[in-house]
Image 1 (tube, rainbow, N blue to C red):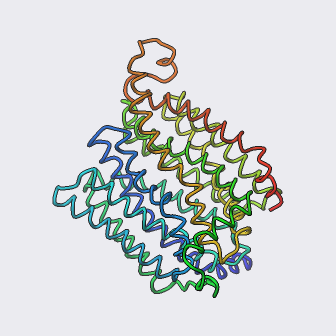
Image 2 (image 1 turned 120 degrees about the vertical axis):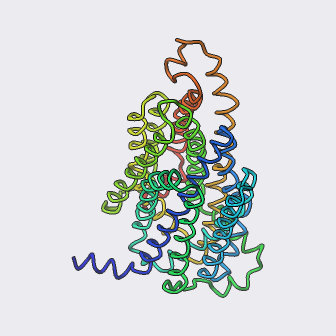
Image 3 (image 1 turned 90 degrees about the vertical axis):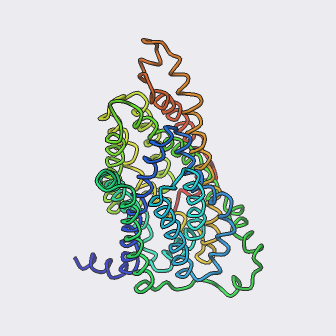
Length: 431
């Protein structure tokens, strides 16, 4: 009990920030979930819906390196507050367009791009802020706590968003989002002190040289760079999965919104359990090998069962097997980064990571929506009853997305095998 109370005392500032941001994240997730359903019901296209996420993640690829250099120079707390406020303003614009019956898909593309830009600047500042307020011995807990909050959001988002959407409409979902933002903003403003970690050289270094510093550090530490590229390959598969999942579940007659919400809820419950397990486990002998085994399990299980299961129970089993080890992976990945990257460079290096590790996410969403709409659904529509593909993946709209999950299953395994023997990543095995 004394050890537990000591941990709470040491982590109280971080836990206050984490808890209020989790509440705000739940509100934002509800809005995003409701807008995905709204956009798919408007257009019935996986590509149109996937482009929402393309617009959100594109700023990561285009602006992250520059955002990291700015983040290392700027006051972290002011950066977080400003980005939060501008993102909330985008949500208010969506609400105003909705209430005046002027909301269109292209409005959401523009607003998501602006919100994504704010997140691009905010994210490296947030990473440095966490390092500044959290004692070193608790770094491993950060990854598991992040997945804990993510899992709670995944559990509650489809339940609350679907209920509120059905009873009161999209505008009430957005209003809840704004209320949660106000709570998190006020706590950060008045109750979260964030010490600065800038050095005098950071203030004097020219901006473009500051941008190059993060890239130069990664060139000199190839293990971290290759680990980011490994995660980029995983993110490509995962984002194509995310683009295809609504197209399959919302299209199949025995599935619909209930199936999509159930899979998301199971994913949330699984990551909650996985987070609790990860927070209690001792450090592995090799963190990078633990990362690989967790991702290999995920890639082998989930896409296979989504492709060939054709039943909600099997899809839920796939979600469980695909996500149970991910919090443990994330905890070790986060610890490797924080132990390896100097504090004064973390803003720039984490921002460079956003470019290298996350550049495949908008690409994956675009390709996932494109392949489902233009390749796999037409292939399945051309099949005759009783054909091998129909036997495996079903028939009608949504069967093409199931076929696509089979391709993602093979692709995910290949990505893991490709990086299994990377000597630069293996050099990190003693961390």
